[in-house]
Image (tube, rainbow over all chains, first blue to last red):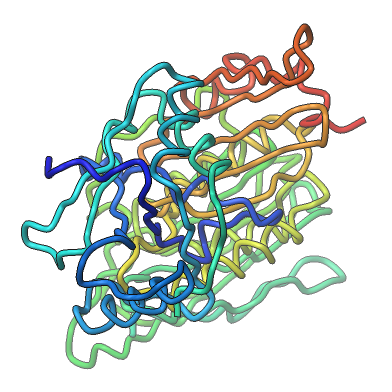
Length: 142
Length: 277
């Protein structure tokens, strides 16, 4: 597990179009690949030094370009990024399941802006439901 | 391209039934023809002959064709042409057992060759769970088959609408080669659950990270029921309801079970928003 990301930061999580149900909810985007022993939820850290921009919108645009340049992800045309506040998400999860889930840098073997949300496997559907409820914004991934 | 066969003669007294279904993917090496649907005459023979061709050129494909008779709770397979390398199968007459809902001819050769991993098998099988568990043995991708089932034999009235939504999700999956494709084992598990519990309303659907089908039921102010039908036959679920003693509170209960225990384990009978009026 890499260094912790500060609560004041924001991350974005890719949500495949398939992960949205008929009502536009996307809890499934916050589930682990259980049968592949996925250890954490991959996210992109908008505050990483290689991501530029003065505000959220420009940092997301910078992140999109960095993702494409690194070949880190091939988002679908209608895929979305869910914007999460690290502090608000951790606080909400702690309020419901009484534990602080770590958001950490996970750059080893990945681009430097790659990060992870750990410790979501226990009570996974509850944690995912809370994370979905914590989404600050949904923006196009392309 | 895989095997392809044609129904040559499918005569019932006074009325002809039958359709031709071909193969479209390399992994689909068998197919079936529905030769008769209700009402089936009792004690009347049905004659079928099959011509089976292959685009594999000189590769000799062994074929075994099987009658499958089914009703809502029973599947009865009978081999009619076995261990043949000939592409032409002579006419055979078969008299169905009484009170069957349908009669299908399947090429079952590949079903026998392929191994499957451990999976839970429903203990309250329907015609669906029986016949699909047989079909799943023979193909890596039976999704089109399952959606076709929803539009024909599926008992709840929303079958076609569900099939349309599944087709929509499958089309989205094709745009994303990097993600897990929709799991037919997961879909089979979901369909078996819905068919065994016909009082359950049509669910909202999405696809999870393992290609599993996720079904949701929710009603404003009443609650939410979320399920994750994993490819191995297990189901994870979450029940979310308002806290009756705290207007701002929410109660969440999650669990892990199998599709044939889901209704009881999650106490669905108490979830009015999941059940039909």
